[in-house]
Length: 358
Image (cartoon, rainbow, N blue to C red; front, side, top):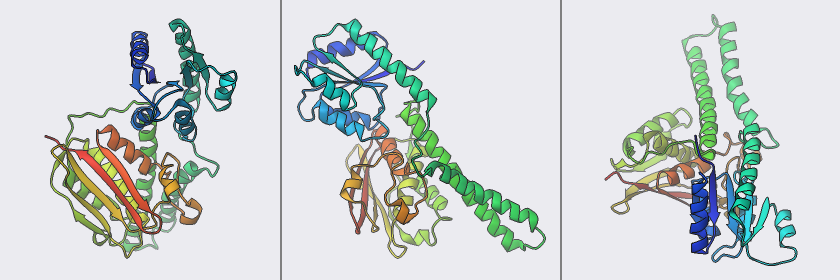
């Protein structure tokens, strides 16, 4: 049975170690951070069931950390408890108004902390289990992404059945191809939703012993993308090596597909997309995916998260807005690094540092 997970954010080392030891003894899975910025880095790849956080900390204090979490649709429902010795008459009211679930003053009794943690996690589990799916938003994007390819499949099959004798071989081949593309789109949507849920619940394994061939994975991805983009081979400028990476091949193919798909989707068809790499050092291979498309606004780069699509009304994008978010999480969970540099109207460069299989 999986243990309940707690993220502890506390800058005082002795107290941090003491609380960690106690909670581990109580059978919790605990990860600790010294400040809010370090906690945000942990939340990139590890999602807890509850957060215990000090207020007064260097680099990023508890208030700043909690404010950032409240803006993130994946993280803002996680129970948040402040631990602090700060004395203010209105501190408790202010914390509650800001969305904090509870407040406990130092020094505190450990049994008091245990009761509070158990109660908050139990309530959070009930909420998560009763609505354990991706938020669909006011425009029912999720339903759209299911119904559109499904209607394409059913509509094509119905036309084939009703007009079988009047269609020649080429007509039928066109319908078969349309059915295949719609089926793949539906499969991709469901795959992304399932991957998101598994990552959110920390129920997916990232085996560090697995290896994949970068060039081989890229060839598969390019073939999978070809039905969606005319002249996709000509649009891709490729310079990558045959190198073994310490990464699950299915995860590597997923990341390559999502990132290259985005690059092609948001670039002018006259512009090439570059996929280029080289050995960064003895531990990492650097892979750059560069497009010369619409780019991101700076505020958009700060809000890449599930369900987040930019200018959907104008662009009529397909998908749930999960691809970029999931690609980043998969790379980080695979012990790699992920960065984006973009300028609106000029394009985007995504850099991956992927661990080399030694």
